[in-house]
Image 1 (tube, rainbow, N blue to C red):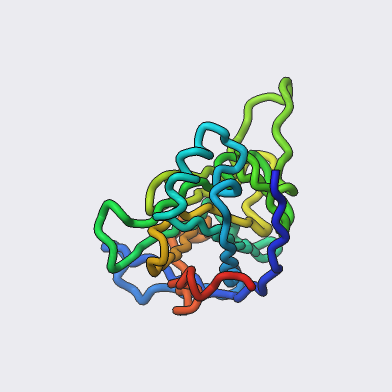
Image 2: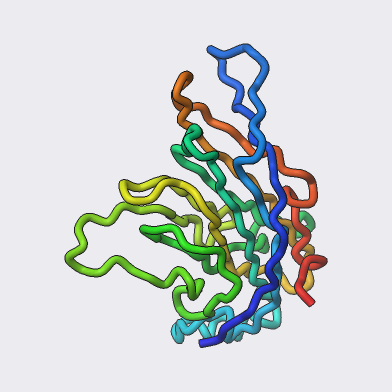
Amino acid sequence: MTQLELPLTPLQEIDLVEVPRLQSPAPQQRIEGRISLSTAVVHPLTAEEAAAGEAEWLGFLTAEASRSDYLLLSLTCAFRPPANGDPFADAAVGVLLESIDEPADRQPIAWSISPKRRSHPVERATTISLSAKLAIIESSLELAPGQGREDIFVMGMGERDSDPEWRIRPTGRHPLIGDETFTMIVKATSGAAVQAHVTVAATIKHRRFGLIPYRADLPAALRSIDLRSQIAR
């Protein structure tokens, strides 16, 4: 098992903009101070680190190492509903990986993602463990047998695809609040430019207007990430 210490990058507050709806022609509402996003951290990996303890994949990734690069991509999203204010009903963070000059069969993919499934919020993490689960050490707690039905707080999807995403929703025990770190191992064509396009969305449950969907108005530096130039040094 390999452990990596990632730099703690600053969080930047971003605005949420109401998604236009046909039945609501009024100007879209803009909300400040509810969500922050960190600068992405990118770290190169060896084939052995990318295999993350999965022996059946080590030979394949090692053979691919002459044609592929493996990059760890990590970012943190902070959810901050105001005290006694309208709560988050759900949220989503998506990443679209792209190598513009490469053909369709040589596009980058999320080889592994974390978290894949978790039933509780955690503190912001700076240490990850490159095990078979690509686990953030601080979020390794699992629901023990006999504790009742598991309500999913975070669900990750899109492993082995170019468009992974995470969906976050409150549970009966935990409101949607706090910092969430999302991590993936990117498998890309060796030497090719790789872009990661980030989207963040959330639904807020307003007391007066009900459920209203929003999208984050991300600045260019957070919306599109050049993985090669962002590699941590």
